[in-house]
Image (cartoon, rainbow, N blue to C red):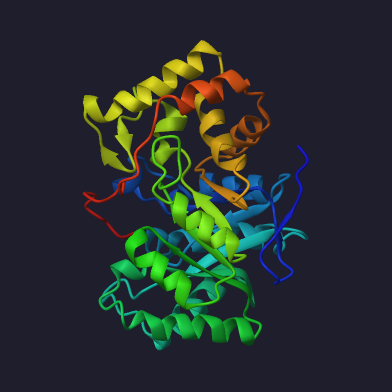
Length: 319
């Protein structure tokens, strides 16, 4: 499929409308409920970077460094990053102490460059400051992030996190080029709506992650009875099943609708879709190109949505 590349602010970096998230490639069964062996991870990275939308997102802390290491292994077998491909990764707190100061930010970048086998990162984010030991300490890490951009170690810089009450004031305080937020702009939840509008008005590129609400809108409520990585009750799953019924009426895959809900929003620069096997890459591309009747969008809008934090009660497990 063809795609029009979109700019990240004034950085000169262009990205596709779909980004493939690789946290599951770090083998995180406590989060996702399944394991991913190294060969499968390598083949998935190759499918992404050799495909029509060669853009992936990883992190220093995904799988305690295993996601980046596996991406790096795939890059080495491919002879390096293919022309036109884009890598996004993140500065992370110390996994043992939660420290997230300037020194830790610099160490995190060094670890990422070594794992990935790169000398610079195209898109580099500060990641999950809400889980650091001291939020105030993170401001030094943010300053270090912008120094990395000035030094040419990163082409564009962003903020990647979940909690909106912390994220919004940080976004206002610094000139980020991009943001990543997850699970908060989906068919089920629109809590990030106001933040997306403000960010768009400020010229910040928006990467909307987890359009499948942790996988349930892609795999189905019977196969995956979890929402945003949390076990869901029958009551919790009722809105999912209403969406599934609406999609079945029009004979359209629920995953296609969930993905295109994000992609069709003019504020969203790119949508991050988590994948853990090569065929999921192909499936996402097929879903992005699927024909969806306007009547289905009307029906879905009539179902409503919530605006509360979908992870307010989540017991967070780092990895």
